[in-house]
Amino acid sequence: MAQRRGGKARGTRRAAIAGMTVAAAAILCYAGAIQARRSIDAARLPVVPVTATLPASVRDHLHDRYADAQKEPTSTTAVSALCLAFHADLALEQAERCYSLVADRSPSRWRWTYYRALLSSERGGGEALSAALREVLALAPDFGPAWLRLGDAEFKEGRSDRAEEAWNRAVTAPEPERAPAESPKHTPDAPVSAYASLGLARIALARGDADR
Image 1 (tube, rainbow, N blue to C red):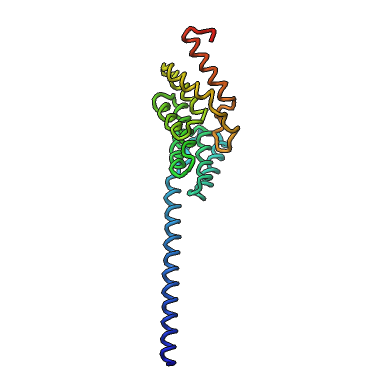
Image 2 (tube, rainbow, N blue to C red):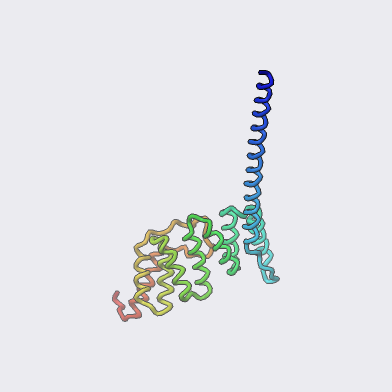
């Protein structure tokens, strides 16, 4: 009987050791997967452009944000700060690639798509800008700034009817929150409805309807 009890105890110990071994292996695999994901995400970050024309303050700003993102490459907060730094300092190619990374992981994908649309605007606009803005509005139909910029884009392309429709939507859309933390520094700060009303006035003048 004593032998049976000893054998049972040894079997219990072996089972416990086996269980701990499996648990340790699972933890190591999980940690390895996390580290692999961090390495992949860090490698995908756009690097700071190397150019002698950048002022020292701009280089320092970009390098600081890049270092933060390298430390936390899976953090939307750290990576989005890098995107906004690229955008604010006019490293537009890097900003576009960066916004694409954030949009893939962020629940507010439409906001980052909108900032990518701003990049298209700064490059001259055209069909790419209109398409990007319509993608934003499909996700956030009450976002007035996107309607405003869509009106600008359509008017620039000579499509007055589409511009009028977009600007009318901008006039009635709720004003966005003032100065959100995650905004490029050079976004308009005046009421969206004021800009949109000016656009509608331009259409009226173009049609010879000065009274309107």
